Image 1 (tube, rainbow, N blue to C red):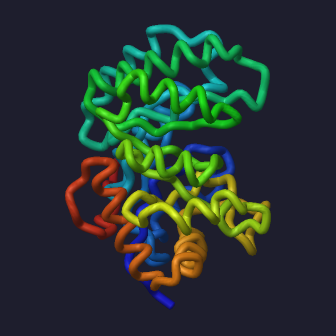
Image 2 (cartoon, rainbow, N blue to C red):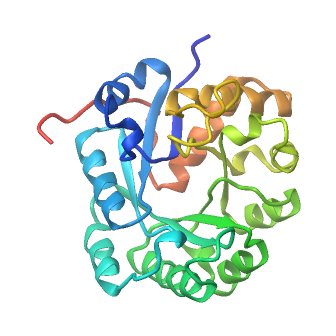
Length: 271
């Protein structure tokens, strides 16, 4: 069945997993039901690549930022580059930024320093933030509250915490990013979150090439598979897939301060 066009709010199309067929895949997304895509930076190189992709494809946008796992050795040089490029009309967010305490390095102190710095930068350039938070639920909430990060808005990417915390974020005006994990059998907390928070607080994301939904789990993910996520959300909420796609696309447009137009505008030649 063909649905309305979907907005993929979080992808990594610069990843080497797409090196063999990136252009062909991206050119075919409209036919597979994808309207807009945001390619998200994780370090300086991937942020630069995200911006290049956004310039090359009309339906793509870029987020610039440094992932918490990439903050060791970070300097103000990277912040300067982000600031200098944040005003480009295809740049829609600062991210992904945040905290990841699943691994011991970089240290919690270093991660916290650069999370705070990039929130400050987002406020300066007046862009929303894309937040990565893993095994850092309370600290992330504390930082976002104390810094009043809700003033610039944003999305909690790949949400993995409790429905109660999701409701707190939604009340603050943050969106909750939902991807392929919601189709996994062990995703009980995320399922409850999707069932309980307002649909107006959800956005769809792939995190591709990672986290492909069932029945493609473990394979390379891409934006076209988001229809599986939309179908699962519709099933959980007892509504139509069309309503899920329409509402989450409108949410994504608000999140990234993009005017309406759930369309795939095409490709710029020459980049």
